[in-house]
Length: 82
Image (cartoon, rainbow, N blue to C red; front, side):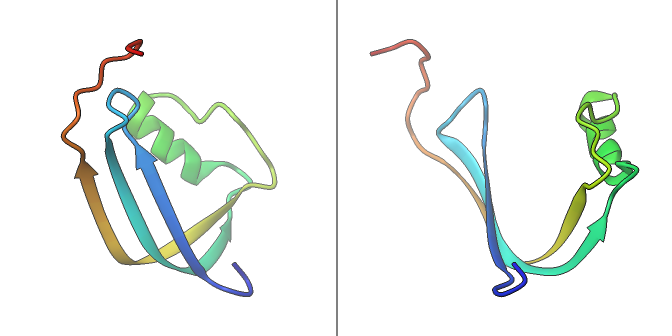
């Protein structure tokens, strides 16, 4: 990312793998998070608990979003089907 700041991030819905979101952009800042404050805020929002994986070397990347979107494919997810 120091040589080429372009990044892409995609997230798939655990309950429906045919539903996803994606972001493309550029890293505009790197911030240390040794006290895990950033990760704790996110974890508290979604789980009401602190982030469980502590790391004194954690780094957060700030991304300037250039493109973002979501898509749900028209398949019915049926776990266990072969």
